[in-house]
Structures are given as C-alpha cells and as structure tokens.
Image (cartoon, rainbow, N blue to C red; front, side, top):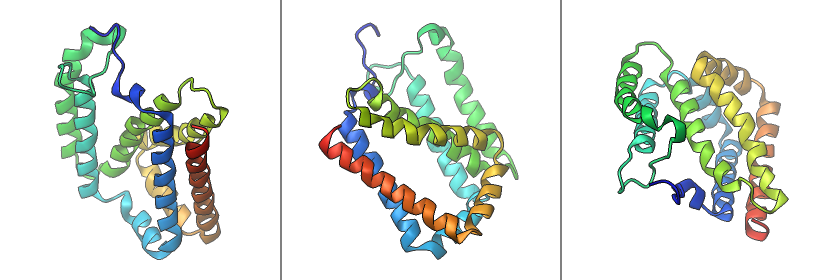
Length: 197
C-alpha cells in the first residue's frame, strides 16, 4: 500500500516552505519590534494561559490522530514502517492521553502544548528541505534544530518557558537584538526562496 506512497509533507516544494517560513518569521519578529510592550506583557503571562494551552493541545492531538489514521481519504496518514503493528494501540491511546493532559490542574499546559506543536510543525519544512539541491536550503534546518531542542525541553519541563520568558522580557537589549536577528533571518529565507529554492 505504501510502496509508492509520498506523504503530503514530501510533496511540499522547498520554495513554498521557504516562503511560508520567511513570512512567518518576519511577521512574528516584526510585530515584536513594533509592539514591544504588548508582546512582552503577553510573553510574561503566556506560560500560565491554560485556555490557550487547552486549545493548542487539542490541535496537537487532532494532528497526531490524523497522522495515525490509516484511511484513504486522509492526506496526513503516515507510514509507520516497522511500527505499523502499533498503529491501532496508538490511535486508542491518543484520545486517552489528550483527556488526561486536558484535565490536569496547575500543570502549565501551554508550554507542553506549544512544545508538542513545534515538534509537529518542524517536520514540515525539514521534510521540504531534506536532500534538496541548493546549499541555501540549510537555512531551514539551522533555524529549526535549536527550536526542536527547546521544544523538547518545554514538553518535559514546562516551567522553563515561564522562567525563560521572565528572564527575556526583563532584558530590553536582548529582546530588541534577538527580534532584529529573527527579522533579518526571515528576510534572508524569503530572498533565498525567491531566487534559489
């Protein structure tokens, strides 16, 4: 069934992935620079925003469920290769784990949900950049590998997002220059998408 099957992530052109990533970086870091007070206030409270965390957690588990659901109409279904025999168990566990996490009290749900979301999201541009020809494609994994590392910490130790955000918002110079770097990096990815990807 899967011999000639390409996952939908593998069909995403490198140029499109670069355009989306570059535009997202410019939008996020541009907003942070244009509205520093609102952004820093949001960051200082974001780790304890349980409502947003529960929404994002639900999105995460719907995404995971669709990756596991092996039906012909599902474009997100994924080949698990040697672990295919565990698919049914994982499909059953998916809503159970969601229910347990969703119902937890004082568990800092948002950092866990955000970390999981970033882990799910990263595979999309990384797959688009995998073994492609232009060397500039390396701009994509160079950005995403540190993000993946941080995301894994947030899933396992959610209080780190709260602590890091508190440290970050109280250092105006670091806030300014890190967002300038993100803005320039996004512009670089965008330029490469137009001319080389």
